[in-house]
Length: 268
Image (cartoon, rainbow, N blue to C red; front, side, top):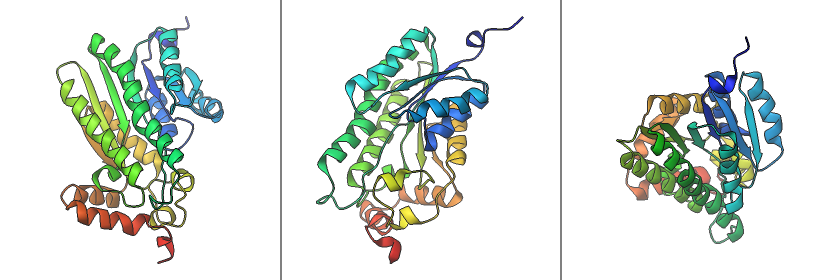
């Protein structure tokens, strides 16, 4: 007798799952016995889905721009259509904008806020209540070690990640007696398309060594499953940098961040 997978495997949702950390997070869920509902802005999510299916998961895809209200409603509508409970969700989709604030594009930064901040709150609002009603669920927000530093030359991006870290910790405390856990994933510079898309190829951070997204995702997944509050994920260097950022004054952190992200710093 062939057993229906949907009756035996829990469902996980991953946003921004077509590449980078989100892609690797989805692979972690698939390898560890979850079915998937995955989202991305582009059609590459359908290619990624084939990989996840190859790891044993049933996969639903949603192509939507989460920087818009309707874009966030789309995956939630698909969740309701499946008639399955979301056991875990990785609210991961995000984008960066690098450069001098006086020169960066306002619309790009407003889009960043809509994707990194607004969509995260919107999707959490939809999913968390369902989890609390069931008294079961795990939520992962992809923040960043940039949340711990004023982000010179990434001012709006770093602030968005600081929002997500604070939001995650606040929700975690609110939900502590509900059976729902909240974890913040805090990677450092990671080998994804992030820096190129953010216009930061000429920075030390963009040109320098970066952590493996598969290792970042593995550490994030394990922290989520263990119910931890946050995880500075990646290499030992990243963990040391993140830990130091928690105790250094903001003025020092801002200067350290500047050294990594100032335009042209790759050649200094």
